[in-house]
Image (cartoon, rainbow, N blue to C red; front, side, top):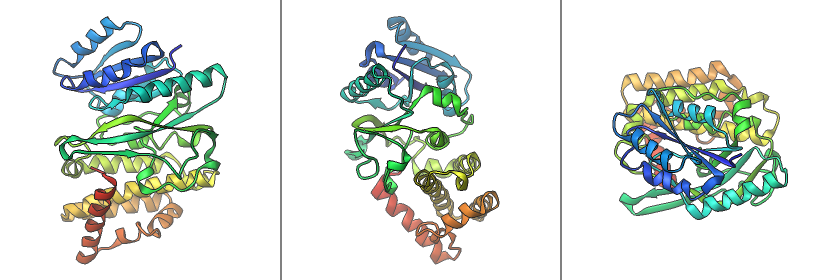
Length: 338
């Protein structure tokens, strides 16, 4: 059985997908690469099939009708045969030396019959246009190089949220929690990094810079202008996260606090983008989003609105909205949201 299944969702990715695929091939026969062509109109499928023909024991080319990033990830989960599962977007790549260290670690825990639900690694923002490279690690938040539970974690800084880039799940866990991402929707990686967490009992933080996250394309989903244009999808994802769990019923305090903090971030980003756009329609959407949280879970609404970040988001005056916009851009410069 393969140690690691890596799903590469591809939509019209012919210009850069080979870099992503080649970076995973460094793992050899320990990896399974699922190239999911999400109804592309270019020669993405032909490239995927060429890799499948050349590496029949490693690569599988899967064609499906267009359903968006979440649909492609769902397809990968449904077809994965590896013990562990990782998503690699087609414009990103793995550091090859780090990948080999990850596989060595997974091989050891399988050999020693050690149970592990989630492996956490660092990721690196790669922004060539600005000559920037920034590694995101979990120092101080998660003990390194030891098997832990949620009770062992510490304080996560705002820049240390667990993202799709940093997470490797046990494939069986994704099946057990019945994770299904919405179709034709951007920003579903937040659901992926949020909804399965209560099912994670044992985890491990391996201090390697595995995932290289390319950022800076004009059409990229995290570009601020694009995020504003797609704000309805951001709101949809945030509401699905609100609905996914009653966070007040999560017994482990540290996990509960982390998930509330993550949801707070989603509310902050959505609210700031809506205020920044500034139209009466956007301000109405902001009000609706907070009302949705309030009526879904009053306790969580109260907690979030009484944090140092949540309280200013309630400002309704023009000066208050300026503070929200300033705060968003300030943290964006520090943490590199886009």
